Length: 333
Image (tube, rainbow, N blue to C red; front, side, top):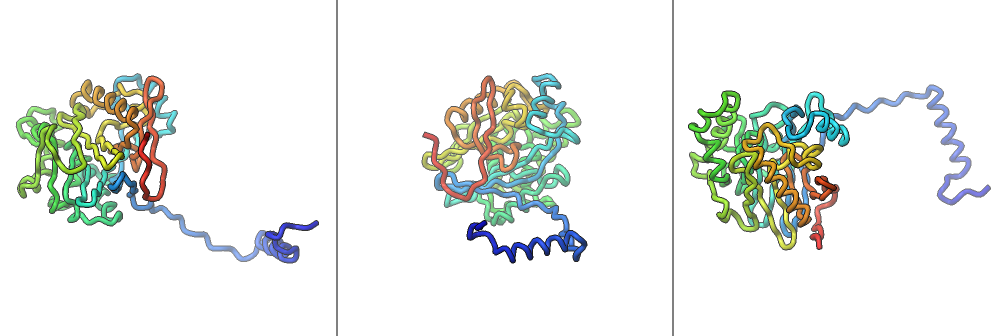
């Protein structure tokens, strides 16, 4: 029989078989490689027209599914199981932030949890550096809202401003709520620590005159539009970045559980200040992004949290971005 040219000669093949047999019969043992447990740095880049978007992984928090409401516990468990989402010790929920470079500025949307939420979160600053940025290079920070997992990353572990050269932007309604000691005093006792963490995060920037608030119609930065998506918090805001025909909506906390809330947008979470308005905002954002085919980025979607929303029956589905080299992606026709 003649073998293809790619096969080794029979004598070589025989030697290989003999060597394998010797090893199996008790030849010299090979040292086992140590188990590698370290994960790769948490950043991912995507081109958006002439902009470059870098997703940054801050970490995760485990959320009890019982804090979701608007569907039965059995329905929620079924939806989680259908997506193979473990619920013990809680539903692992990512915390993400996003850098957008427009050629003139380095803009960061949300800052992660910093020192506020324990050891599983607070990694955004390290991943920012791993992605090639220094905190001093950030020109502007846009906060979707002032919850600790979005704003506490403004601080170093010592409580100083991590981004000393950045202007920090938050909606006026958001600042008026979370930075108010009067509002905090009227809140339930178990919620008051969140108000303090928000005030502490903003304090060094306020002292430096770099904490700026805006109204819905104000112009913030070139190529970015503030989109009111209130409900989760009083001033919760998403940010629409546009470069040429490409658009990306960084939507903050429109979704906390991708397995449940895309299929059932009417499901709210305990952290919503106004759950009725939060549901209405979610339904509108889903409809708009699915219709227009724009990119979206979610703070609590599985990292890198970039992708599209697709209509799916009576609900919606999440279509995550595929890993790819940094290149321009064609806009939807």
